[in-house]
Image (cartoon, rainbow, N blue to C red; front, side, top):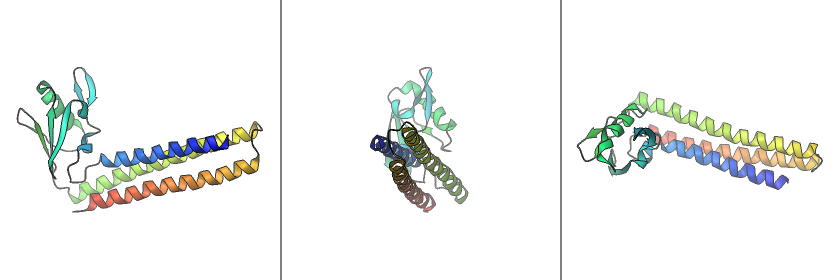
Length: 185
């Protein structure tokens, strides 16, 4: 029973770490990356959809993204979605594809992005701690129901704390790498 609780906690904590890393990839760093547009939602065909379901995203140059819609009639919708997003990018449309130049980041914008990434990292840490809290609650329940002893629960809690510390350290390492990437000129 305890092993099942620990395995579930490990799986959920790993998901928290991966989620935080994925969130980091959606923050622009002055370099073009197709993942930059992952959070952009476009209202097309009467519903909101992710941009990558409506178009092909390419990276022809280090500071340029190209968006080729599958249906040319939704180009204006895609442009509007990009403009309404929090990316601060201005698309240019030539009738066939949308070009999205990635400007050099200002020092102030870099600091804003670092704050944003730190907030994402804190969300990841909190998620890992919530998994720990839930697992401890389940362990205490097992102990109350007489399915396991208090010594086993105590050892499992220690193991859970070590797992949580490892996952938080992984998130912190990813944060440090992303901060360095953002501050790089």
